Length: 150
Image 1 (tube, one colour):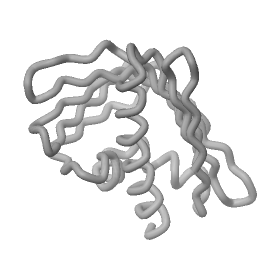
Image 2 (spheres, helix red, strand yellow; image 1 turned 30 degrees about the vertical axis):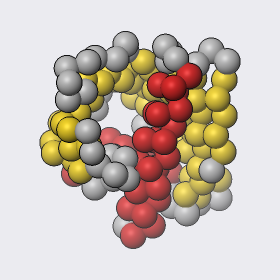
Image 3 (cartoon, rainbow, N blue to C red; image 1 turned 60 degrees about the horizontal axis):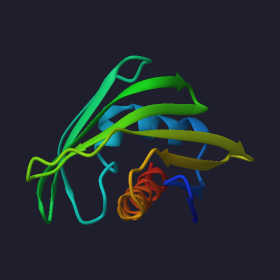
Image 4 (cartoon, helix red, strand yellow; image 1 turned 90 degrees about the vertical axis):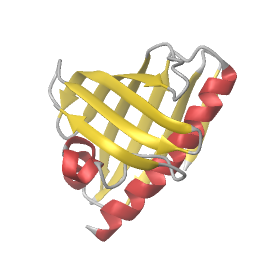
């Protein structure tokens, strides 16, 4: 996995999966599949709703070591099986709400494998960027296990 923190408070993660692009894309767009992996390593998914279409919403709640956290957003672009763009919001157990950020995920087919690149931007601080890097890294590791087993 490659990780790059950029000066404008954004992160980019890239990972190759031994799975066809359509399978990896479906793991991001089918709620039953996403429920199996879309949560950081040290968290438990409580609920997940997804309306994967431009203008559609997603919402998930997860139990973290610090309490219940809600995450939600709106799909801005859905181009199957190449690209997803969605807003990303977080409310923590103490009621704190982060500023809205933007996530772009691209899926590149390379000889039956998939190179996934996730770009998360508009962070307000370096610690927020670093925290989300860890969360995404854990979730993408779960995704690797999920698509490898499918």
